[in-house]
Image (cartoon, rainbow, N blue to C red; front, side, top):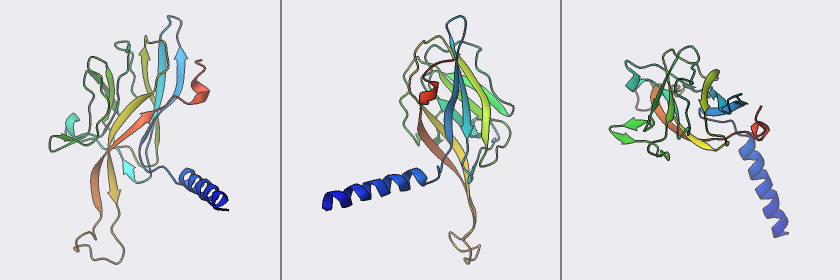
Length: 190
């Protein structure tokens, strides 16, 4: 009886977790193309949550961004960006910071290219942006990591005076870290 209850509780918890909406930006691999020269082109998309936006700042340093770490074998000049985004590749990937301290700690292998896309035009919440690509000479599909800096707006609390502490709407920068997985249907490269 206790075993059956435990199994039911585990199943219910699993269903609750899978039914919950994603509450953060996601960077996903949408396609992998095998090119005639043996290189592989990865196609990425960025999905934002309803409550978050991507906003340009006064400079590249203050703009929201997404970084893919350790993109082995990057073919120089191969990365493409959709309209409203700027690409850069640095040995040490751009990571969200606050007062000089990193907010997330990704594994960033020295000497390995990282892909960073910085927003130059505002992106609304609940959007999917396609058109990010990069080509690699590495022949295997690997799992990676990404980080992002996003802007999240929390609405004012109903019934609380706007001047009361915590009653007003808040806009804050948030740092995210996640795994960049290649979905199983992409394991067979096109």
